[in-house]
Length: 353
Image (cartoon, rainbow, N blue to C red; front, side, top):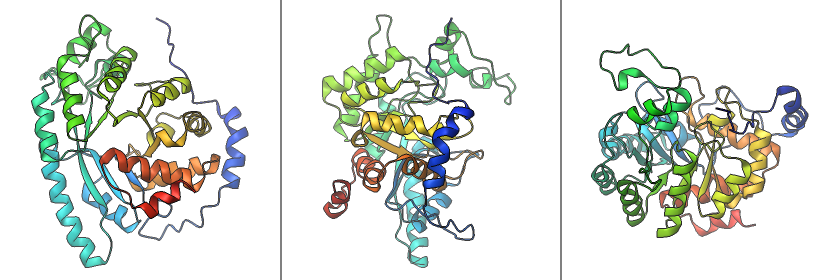
């Protein structure tokens, strides 16, 4: 089967034509490696931060974000994810004590949760309902457990076979096996499963966000249409350039016009995915900053920490042409709406002047 996914990585010989003027023209100020904080992330709200097992420390990144003047962090994953809201509440208490001692303003923290409880487990709306009642602000549709992910990059067989080598990783699975081991959100007639519809309705009632995860195009279209049907305003398309979402820039524009938020991430620019930042900037220009957000999707040891990742992403988009007001819109105003945070009017004015 032919691979019809768009390729926005751009060979380096071509990329250099746009990247060199951008890198030479961007002057953020001296980045002093000896500083214990990160410059250039003021007021940012990171709506896609990882801090689960083997990744960055949740309290540590919250301390760095506080010292750096960020406004908030939404943890997509965290150690203790079986009750992520309780875990984040404990981190917040420790952060508040530390900031009081050190004289910093603590960054606001919110918990996210997956709608799944692991491979081979049925998606149960009651799981999401309990998380929402506990204070979770963002639900993620299937990511690593999605059939789409298994079909594109494979997975760890130990997730569905207790006798498998825990270090093993499969090649991309057939679609048949991907459906067998992963989560797919449509029924045999191509309609959203009732459980998925119920989760969207519950998120709508709780003013929480739903991140679309790693859907196939049919799943993506079905979720988009359902958001429009119920008037849901906090549907978020994560890392649209990633191979798990793989939207064209025109499809991103269509999604934004349908009322979704387009969340660009440092993950896409990282060496692991290698998207050309010039193409990300082109997408922002096409979609419009008013429907875009910037977040880290960081935490893995192969990435910078989330605060530094956000600095890099903001810096790249500024270097290619985003204004300070547009960066503020994408990094503060729009993420604040997604997590239900009221941005002071005097700050909102910065995004409109």
